[in-house]
Image (cartoon, rainbow, N blue to C red; front, side, top):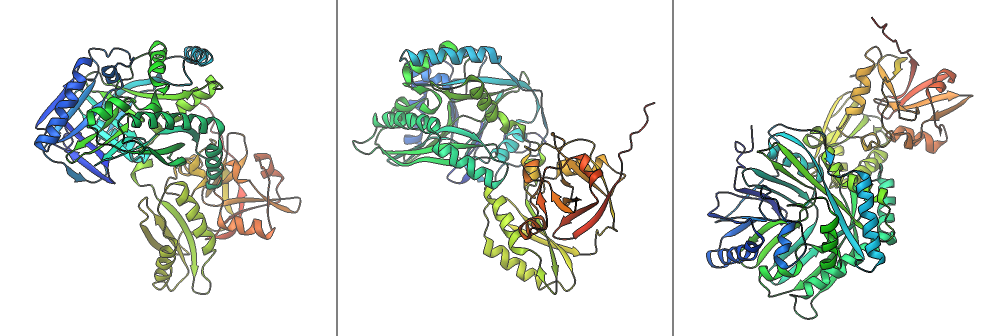
Length: 592
C-alpha cells in the first residue's frame, strides 16, 4: 500500500499543530515560487488568500528563499524543489498520528563531503571568528542515499522515532518532504509571537541516572549556554523589528528537552506584534538558530564554504490560518525524497564557535543523523514491560522496586506514568487471581497499562538450567539492554545463536559477561558471589538490586574465564528467584 492509497497523495500536507495532526486535502490552488524574485509576491498572495478568502495555506519555504530578503545563499538548481510551495485549502481534517502501512528501503547514507574537507571549512570559520567577521556559524552538509518505496511509510517511522512536536509531510508530486522537526521557528496566535530556538546538543545517557547527568551537564555547559544565549539574542533582535516596543521577552532560558537519540538545549522568546506574516518572515527568516551571528555576514561565509544548497533543510514548514494564526518549524531532522530519481537527502549541521573542535562537531552532526537509524520494530509496538511474581501469601514480590524501575524508564522514554493508578490496577487485578502467577505489566507511550498473567508454573525449567555463551557480543552502548521493554532483539538474537541451551549468557564488545536473556547472572568465586556491573550493558534487575543492598552479592567485571573459575553459577530474577545453572560448551561445527 503506498501513500496515495493511504489517503496522503500529491499536493497534500500533513502536520502537527496544537497537539493534533492536521491533514490538508484538495487544494483550491497551489502557490509556487521557483525564482527568488517570486518569493515575496507569493507570500503576499498567500496572505490575501488567507485574509480575504478564509483559506488555509500549508507548505514550506526553502533556506534559499532567504535570498528574497537580500541574504546570501547558494543559487537553487533548476531541478531542485521550488523555493516556496504552499497549497491553499478551504479546510483541514484532524487525523490520527501517522501509522506505517507501506514498505521502503534506504541505501547506505553517504556524506556530501569528506571529513578532511569538513575540517578545512571549520578552520576557515574559526579564522573568520578571529577576524571578527562572525561569532558563530551553523555549518551544514547533506547525507544522501538511494530510496525505494513509500515516502509516507518513511515519514510515519521518522515521526514515531523522533517523537517531535513539529513534524510535517509535504507531497509535491516528484518531491516529498518528511520532517520530524523538534524546533519551533515561530507560532503566531493573534498578536502573540513565540519562538523556541534550539542550540546545544548532548547524547542521551543509557540509563535514567546517566540521562540526568547528561541533562545537568548540558544545562551548565559554558559552550552550549553561550551559543544558546547568542541565538536567543538574535531572535530577540529579529522579533524587535516587528514587535511592539517593550514586548520582547524570554520567559524560559536553558530548557533541556529529551528526544530518543539526543538532548537539546532550548529557550523561549515571545513578543507582541501587529505585523503581517510577510513582514514577520522578512524580519526573521531564516531562523537564527541555523545561520549564526551576525546573520547577514555569517550567511555570506556559509555560502562560500558549504558544499551545496541546503534546499528545504533549515527552511521552514508550516501553515497559515485565518485570524492571524500560523506556525512554522525549523526544517531540521528532515528527509527530502526525489521520487523521480529514487534518491533521498538529509541535512545535518552544528554551530561552530572559536573553541570548536572539528572532530567533535562532525560527531555532533552524525549524532543528529541517528534518527535515521530507526528499525521499524522500534516504532511499531514499543512498550515498557515488568514481570512480577504474585502469590496469595505475599502478594506482589518486590513491587516497590518494580514500580520504581518502571518510573525510571518512563522518565527516560518520555512516557506518561500515573504511578498511583498503576498500583490500583495491580491491586484490582490481584483480586482476580487465586494461584501463584507470573504477572505481565505493559505500558505504552500514551501511558495506557495492560495487565495479564500466567500460572507461575508456566515456563518453569528444571534445574540446573543449561546455559551457553552467545556466539556474538552485545554492545554496551545499546540502550535496549538497560530498560525492560518489548524491544528484545538483542536477547532474541542471542537465544537463537544457542539453540542447544535452555538460556544464553550475553557478553559485550569488551569480552565482559552481562546477563542471560531472562535473568541476571551471579557467579561464586572464592566463596563470594559476584554479578556484572550495569555499565557492562545489562538490566538492573529487582532481585539483583535487593541482593546487592543486602550485601549478599557484589559487583565485579566478569569474563568467560570466570565461568571456569566459578564454583557455582546462578540465574536470578524476581519471578523465578535463584536458579542453579551449568555451562554448556560451545560446539563448533566442523568445516566441510
